[in-house]
Length: 366
Image (cartoon, one colour):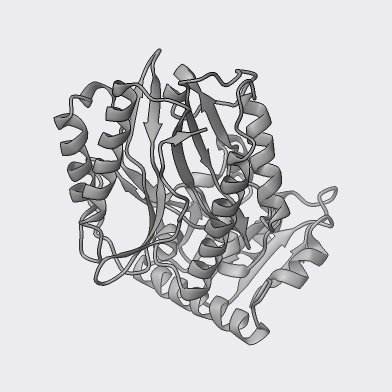
């Protein structure tokens, strides 16, 4: 863990495990079998794969194998490490051997039916499927988490500024996307937050399209959605540009999306329901005539996972709290014409918000 004292790290995981222990008690559970990599990371500090965590107020036990055993010993906090011999013991048998007595839940959103059936046939009890317990704790970020997201956002800002210098007639989507990814990692990102989305012209109407060999032409819109990673924490930013000159329609789409984002941001603070944010954006988008083409949902939580609780949709009853990190990303997507999305990472505060992404929002690039 870079720039993080050992005592601070120990305190962080002690606090997280203590809060989760209370959550288990409140849910009338003696223990929980955790499968989600981000959930395991959050509770123990382990950043690898092929790991399974048994969490209980008495003890935290991480089960892995020889590939990750030493790494787990180095990274895990307040956790016993079990190295399972995969050739002589099934995962179910190993879990059964270490599972404490009493009611147990399992992290149901992160396991395949096939693997769960293999495990369940070995256990001496029926485990309760559980979703959202750890994710709920993860919604409020501590200062260390916010610092990492800010660093990831700052890397993305710098990388985008550099990449815009490579925009030219005839450049391909793939070439710019590769340039952006390379620059983020050169600036210190641990990788990419997700597969970079970079699309030209009519292809910009694909909300999650894949960069291809399409070449840039004058008047093309350029949609760029990307992020960096620091200590596992992600940024997520979208900017949309038009190359050299914009039509009146393109300009109207862009100004409408900016207005929708600003209108929503005016409401962001602790105590606001996510439904209110989404409704504010929709009023602007629909009122400008884009109801048929507006993106479904305004944003999402951000942290160890790209898409975390809360999800800002017309049906999401989630009241914002100080420490939530969310995205605000209204969009308009018109097939055969193009799309516009503007996305920023937002830290919710008691009185309002702090914007963590700072790349300029000019529309025309040359």
